[in-house]
Length: 137
Image (cartoon, rainbow, N blue to C red):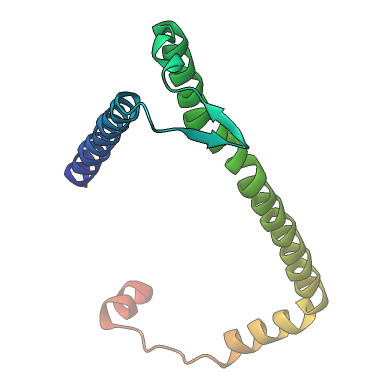
């Protein structure tokens, strides 16, 4: 099992690295083409001006995006999906325990009667010769 997880980790890191290289290659291809323009909400994005972005801004942006992907999204999913499911199951378990305890209290005389009948009507096992000899002494 450990080997499977190691291989999955290696493959996922390789895929992330491949995506990083593909994004870098796409970025360089867009910068090299002067006639390419990207329009977002009607505003043209100046690709030539983005070449002069300082490296610390890019690193900070990548760290912020990594923190969002690795911390914020799992916590949001945990609290928005996992916590309501846990609370629902806890409430259903409490209701089930309450119903079972109420049933046990209501049917306890019947349960005791059935247990007494089982004890009285069970088959008597014949005693083995070793047990009979130890009782006779």
